[in-house]
Length: 302
Image 1: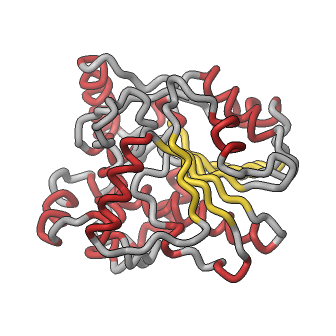
Image 2 (image 1 turned 90 degrees about the horizontal axis):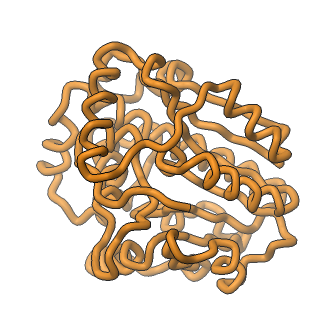
Image 3 (image 1 turned 180 degrees about the vertical axis):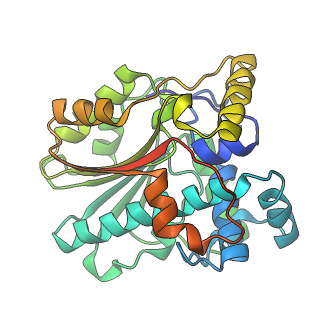
């Protein structure tokens, strides 16, 4: 799996969110991991965590509230990114809760960044194991932030350091104790737009090899699916990515994404578009800007 590491901090980082940090140098942490972390923190400050309550969002960020507010208000459409960040995590965590109720005890967070689910885990009594998969430098940076904030690591959180250019995720997870023959829930947020179709396919193949697996991920449609102002941002962001020799590698029509999932054996597919996200959660976001983003959150079961 492969993706960019040093994206510019603008709205489209906020909409496309986390990328897998495959190009990181050994001592370099992921800048893009900061974007969704700041969005989650801004959601707590501005929207009182009404979509995704997260008491650790500000603590792990280690930034002042005024800095978070400045970030949240630096672009007139920034509230759309804040909504999408909070909503996709809420959708993933609601689906995860249902999976745990059905007996799943393994959670894999691919490209975890500064994700705080393991700290907020409401299923402690169920003894679930949470595997956070990310670049070693990003994980070291996260551990440092947790230590500085005096936040203890949960006992069943397992860091799985993976250099996505060189390492095999399946092998690394197995070495960390992941049970291939037991059900698993995969959270795969902010990654797919940066992956090639081959990389997406190979990741879905791996997930499909695990009986009773399920996944939540997000993807982007072609630019035509965005409202005019948002399309201008897409064009601007594409040019910026090209300057640093990076690009959004994949866009999908909803029917095409459903066909890919079915071809990998995923049969129970829920595709939630931005309009539904705005309808379901938009009232919880203060001053939500008008506009339509061609972004989707998918929950699929194998």
